[in-house]
Image 1 (cartoon, rainbow, N blue to C red):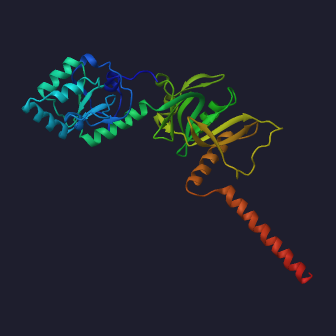
Image 2 (image 1 turned 180 degrees about the vertical axis):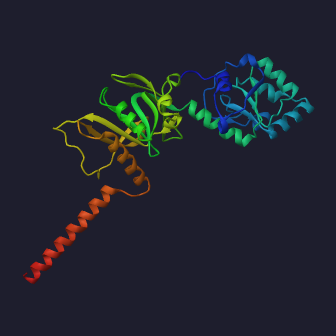
Image 3 (image 1 turned 90 degrees about the horizontal axis):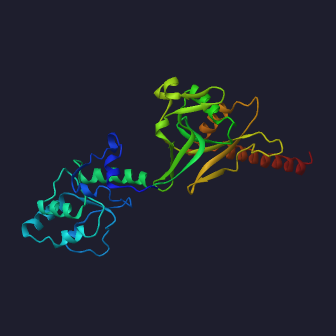
Length: 326
């Protein structure tokens, strides 16, 4: 990813329960300092003079405890540990609860060019929001040619060669009440270890679609804001491909397939496309079937079990009749 700075942190466009409420209260000359890790640090031990294994590359969070200790250092005029803190080239210092740094701390921050940030949020709430925000910023990501739709609450990534009908299938799904996330270029991020989140690769393009013979259309304007969403977890991957008569397609679905993106394996199906096949309704059925699987109900497995029970009972019946000489 491109370098992420303290200024970028201040400029993050986060809303509602994700808003960090950050303002810069000092050290503005260092706003272009790079933040290189999503990990955070509470510098209580460092302020007491213990710098072994100090996380200098992390954002330093100052809560009420650290603030009280800074005030004690200010009164005792023992600022050696604070001076050493700023010699570590930390990205920035961040004060929660609307706290203000002590005068000596603010002066040393200005001298070293270390940004001082402030939020009115309490430490625990702010820490959770900041971890989410940085986790998204530093998440592994890639952009692929695909279409992402939400069908019955399931995030479905439609893959396939250009012209196979991904956008047309998505358009029909939108008409049936489902929602578009992104078309043509989908940016995928791996968050929380094993969750794939998809969104449009270029937010400036919004929820537009290219339909051959028609051109570019704006789904939000044509179908309303209820037909779109900004991002969605990818829970099922569906590849649309031209029908190949020589290929053996899965007709039962007992053997589940997966498709790996960014090291995360996701349920995967292949849907052959040919005239006469209603692809949108097949996609809807696949989404409903995936929801059933998440609830622990597997249609293909139940079918196999029923067949095996029937075969066992039929064999037992034949053996019984043979034994009786019937």
